[in-house]
Amino acid sequence: MRRQDQIAEARKLLSHIENRTTDLADGIYRNPVTDYTCPDQAAREREVLFRDMPINIGLSGLLPRPGDWLTHDWAGLPILLVRRQDGSLGAFLNACRHRGARVATETCGTGTKSFSCPYHGWTYGLDGSLIARPDEASFAAAERAAHGLRALPVVEKYGMIWVGPRPGMTLDIDGLLAGMGEEIAAYGLDGYHHYETRVLRREMNWKLAVDTFGETYHLQHLHPDTVSPLFHSNRATFRAFGANHRMVGARRTLDELHTVPEQQWDVFDHTVVICVLFPNTVFTFHRDHVETWHIFPGDRVDCCAMYVSLYVPEPVTSDSAKQHWDKNFDLLMATVEIEDFPTCEGMQRGFAAGAQDSIVFGRNEPALQHYHRSITAALAEPQPRLAAE
Image (cartoon, rainbow, N blue to C red; front, side, top):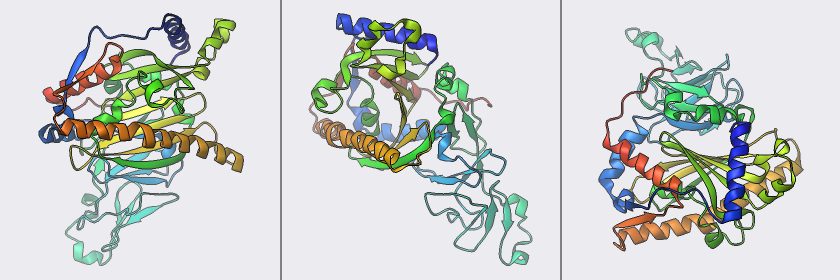
């Protein structure tokens, strides 16, 4: 967020606190329960949102050095990402061109110079090219140049990584962000270091997990001893960027800005910024770290999987720093695992029981209204291939 935008958001939040208000939508919005329970819609979502749109993988800090690599299977595709020797990124389908076995069988690695298929030993360079295979003479008619790993489009921009799930797909990240690129650039995400990633699996529709980050209305009720002492409940600003959106929540220390000249305001020290990158990525910008949530549908309409990553501004080189970040991450996980997600799983069971036909998003929940309207719009229209980067 640019400096002038930070000041503007802080002014709005101070006004909301003083007047006991929050950013409002024009009216209420009723979202059908079938959005969370219908298998046909779930199949449509997988096709439109996770096959025809780019997948956000995370921050560039996931792969900081040449030879670093990771596998990504969350969207139902076997993806391999590699930091090449020239510093650029490569993305490939993680399938040997001989018989289709995975060439990278672990989740990540460092300092790698090549990948060798465990089945027959076909070996690929970091650029995906086939560089060696046993009994070469038996495959002379299958030229090496035509049997490299199948490449996927990949773009690294604003300190983030996106992959196109279809070979040959073209990407327009700025078009996808719809004006949010400048916003993200201001956070300096390319300077953050990956600390840790944890995996969660829950018995609820994937959109319920995204919904968790869509309002501050619940803080005082669901998190009275964890989050509520730190943040004002039901006090937030909202702005849409195409299908994406940004919320800014107020820490309870925000009132301290009243005693400081505006030119000296450290807005990030008194707020949390929550950005949802459509359709399934949430990143939260705190005063001293960044969290990213990547949320994917599971095998059933009522289950999901997600990976949560913590990024920090400086490399962790001491035991005290490690203890600090471990404590932060443990608190975050405990909050969602004990308070947020069990509540959402109860909601999912209520949906299946037929307790209601729709749920109501109030005027004080504009982000949730915007997000679900965007889901509905995306599923209603054919998705064009995005223009070239």
